[in-house]
Amino acid sequence: MLDNVVSDQLDIFGKNKQLIRSNVVANQLRMAKSRLIESADQRICHFIFNTGQKSKISAFSRKLEKLMEGPEAVEEFERTE
Image 1 (cartoon, helix red, strand yellow):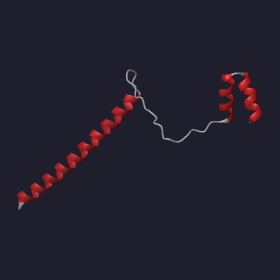
Image 2 (cartoon, rainbow, N blue to C red):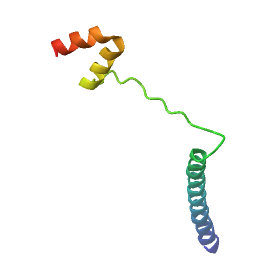
Image 3 (cartoon, rainbow, N blue to C red):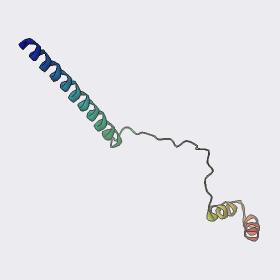
Image 4 (cartoon, one colour):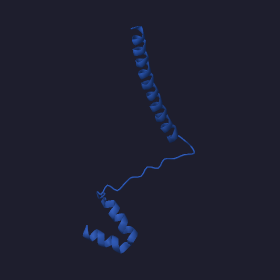
């Protein structure tokens, strides 16, 4: 009977210890990621993928594009807009 109680208590202790250990490892990984962000010698590059949606082009952007093409394109753009 005493052996069963001790065995049960050791099982509970082992499960609690394993849970605490997994939490500590998770916290260490989280902290390592934050240190990597602040690192001076390593950088993480995040890529933005094409979602398939067209981006909105403002009137200013369209006019700037025409300015780069030349003054004739700007005059024609202003007549049509």
